[in-house]
Image (cartoon, rainbow, N blue to C red):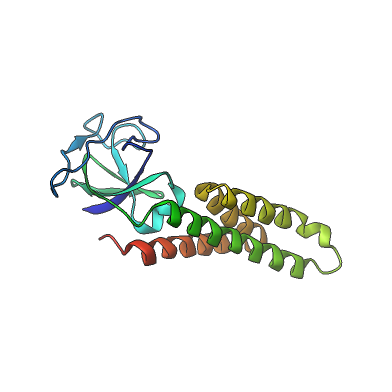
Length: 184
C-alpha cells in the first residue's frame, strides 16, 4: 500500500530515531521491518499515514512510503509490519511549509473573527480565540507549520466544537492533497 511518512532531516524517524535507508537509482529503499511480529500500536509497527492524516504528523521531510500488508488504520495513522521509502515528496519544502503555516494562521484568524462575532456584548468570551490567532501568526512566521495547524484546529474547536475541529483538519488535509496529489 502506498502512503506517506514524515521524517526528521536526514531521513530519521521523529519518534523512533531510526535512520530510514533512502531510495537509490529510482528504486525504493530496502524494506524496514517493525520491531516485533505483532502489530502493537506505537511499539512494534511501521507507521505512516494517508493524506488525511498528514496534518497530525508534520515534520521536516515528507516521503512516499510503501507498506506491506496487513495494513491497519489506528486513529490518525496507518500501521504495518514493514515499509520502505519510495521517493521524497519535493512538494514539501520550505516554501510549502511557509504556505501551509500561513494558510493555517489565516484560518485561526477566521475562527477568532467568528468568536468575536458570536460574543456579542461579551467580547471577553472571544479573548482566547484572538490570542490563539495571534499565536498562530507568530508560529507561522517562525515556519512552525505543525504548531500553527494545531492552533487552527483548536481554535475551530473552541468556536464550533468537535465537528468544526474535524472540518478544519479536513481543510488542512485538502491543502496537502492539492499540493501533493493523493496517495492510494
